[in-house]
Image 1 (cartoon, rainbow, N blue to C red):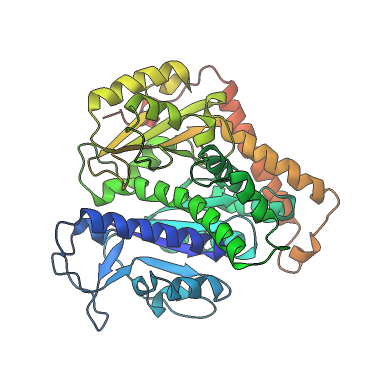
Image 2 (spheres, rainbow, N blue to C red):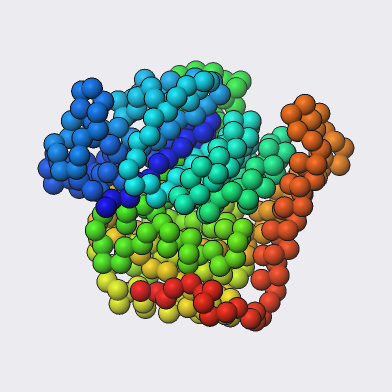
Length: 438
């Protein structure tokens, strides 16, 4: 029985990432499809419907594809942009929630929800995390993954702090993302733009220099950033959609990478970052090394600066198991694994490569270095909160205790991760340890 995955795109940020994600997923399946037949791999993300919108069974000819997705926003702008764009035919009106509307079931064997949203701004942080809580109440057996896009600018730290508490309570796995880290990736890959410095400058001056050229440059930069996030999601779900010798299901991610409740924040990195037809394919060992470099992380942190509770290595393409084992042995000498889980690597291998990459790697690590991000968020929040700046905007809808709970949550997260980082040994029952490598 195929397992379906439903994406929920909330707010402008979530819908922008969603557009890149669906374009990439559609291109990937079109490239690898052997014929125009709707198969199990496609059913993970899509439905096949006839002219009346009735769902067709597996192994029928593709008539019209519909994405297993719900698009949510408080205003119609971002959703309308998707509908009017080249991907508009993937969605119908029952999948849009812009004010008051309905949504029909579009799954048979639901495994997971993917919630794409920002942690800054009212729609992404407030409505996005509220939806996450509803999913837990109504579909407790389905795993809830979210790509919470962190906003550490002072003006959005209130939203981010409140959202962080909800993610701690209601998500199964959170893949945090920072725009600053994505910008840094664009800077490193200078061949993406003729001048990244000029690009960033144009973005900063956008408000004062309107014009078609500047708008295209802005959209291009954010499209590149969102495509990195989209690649992470398509890579994470590749084993659900394609064959492989070591396929990893999403439930195995939560089982193996989250040894303690609520400590479910995973650092994600992809290698290589960009397709390059001029250079020879990077060596497997270089790809493993890159995945644990600071400039490949989707948040601004150094994975080698913390202690690793567990790590998932999800590969795509023609990679030999012997090469994987050799590189894991090498990584053990470079990374700090927590003593009671020194073999805490979970490996997945999907034989179907990502488009433009003969081989590629997604690393997901539960690492105490996430504390750096939480502490930056906490510090910036307190600068305003000590003066109660902007708090009155929230008090019409919530009690002051919500802020106190949010502060308590981030302090608890920092304390728990620091405790693990500073502990040389911990008595954990053998049954609680993640499953072995293969």
